[in-house]
Length: 360
Image 1: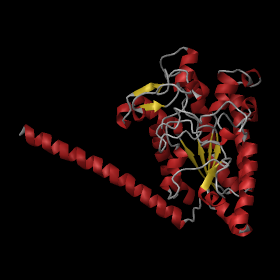
Image 2: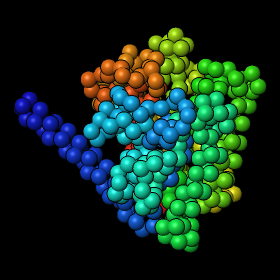
Image 3: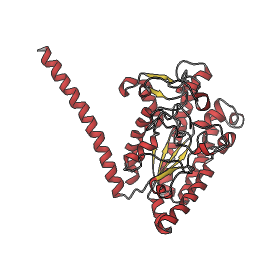
Image 4: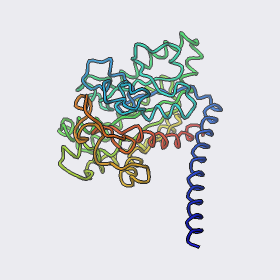
């Protein structure tokens, strides 16, 4: 009798797992059909290191990730400038809507062919933020400069397919905006530059005003479908915990980010009403907190430190040439700041689930 119960339990577990897999596969299939039906052309990306596939390689800045061990699991172990062991969330998103290239290239890549522009690009720059001061401190691209490169992109596109077709192409693209982490780390909490000028509430509101300014410019340049990604739980980043001297997630950091994300999400309805934008908010904070609090559920075994070096302080240059953990798929963090490809895949899945709101 007990053997039958065990067998039945195993069958049920397999069936549930298979159902979950098929449901996810069906969601992706439906999304691709939805993308085709609604003439989605490509993905255009703006932001920081969470979505920079290598633009900083071509800037006079120290904030780069174009050396090992970055890219350890990216095709043949090729470091591209992505601050992870493999793909970013935007690469998975592009793949999920049927992008044949399966990755989003950097717009500043000199090897990028003009015809490849049709599949979408990223203008993002690691260490950037909503606050222009954040980018200026590290000599990277502020959003205003990223948007100027969007203008260049449109010129190239017009040369390829004509002015009218290019304008329509951009209008049917999915714009993704992902940043905010560096504003709080570099400008407020760790380096108290803005904290001398603003209370936390005031700085959050200032960043929101910067975000809205940038989104309005995006809209003027053709954006009609926008995905805004929230800020991850900074208090759980290994680097932040090391600096503060805490073993657990730093609560006051996380509360500040949770509040800021609520403000971002609260702007979505306003953007729909005032600009006619079809927009969606991706709760990266919730996804990462869920993975950190319930690691086994997602296949993780290490949530407190990164895979590179000691996993507590190394990122960017300090990660260069460092030994890494044996299996990054078991880690939430690749270095002391950035997620692994495995974590980015979960974030992408959350983003993909929100994409259907862009077509309603």
